[in-house]
Image (cartoon, rainbow, N blue to C red):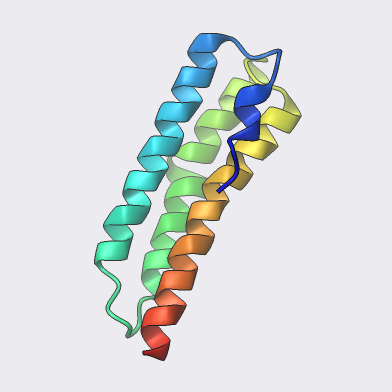
Length: 101
């Protein structure tokens, strides 16, 4: 996991940093929830559901609105989403490892 490069931005206010850090913590909690449901058989839906929560339902729409309101820069928005997607990769790796056992 990166060291949250988006938190290093000089343009971002402290309250925005705290908000993004809280959201990233929430994403981690979602990943942990999905990891508990990995069985090793037909688990791809977990990855699909997790991605939908990030891309469509919760995270991306929120960070995009923060970008539109100029609370974060384009680079900070992109770095934040990359940090979120690292959790997806970890879940995908866990699903693949369980399938191979």
